[in-house]
Amino acid sequence: MENQPPRYFSYKVWAIANPGRRLIRYIRGEFLLTPTAGGQTRVEWRYFLKPRSVLAYSHASLFGNLGIQPFLESGIDAIKSVGEAALS
Image (cartoon, rainbow, N blue to C red; front, side, top):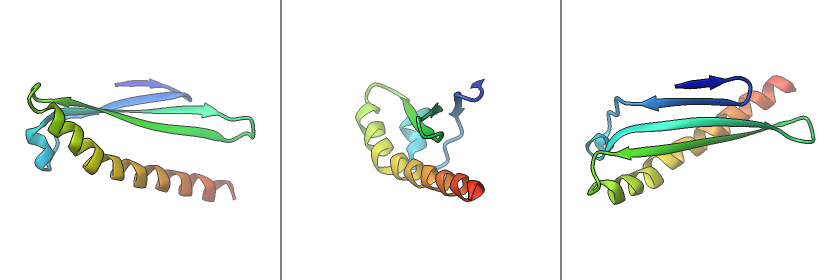
């Protein structure tokens, strides 16, 4: 969707293949990269769910917390590991 190197990147996922597809129209994700005082970079990975309807909102939110959040946490851990390995 948007690319503003080296600070910001956003994207949308439309083709949701798991059971969440019945609740979620799309997922919008974004990376925010902020330099820190120690010469490192703080990476924040956010996501937003677009429910298929107002009625699906609470279930979509639950799906995000239980289904997507763990995926993002493991993904950001992997990104961190690769980045740190490249620096050492």
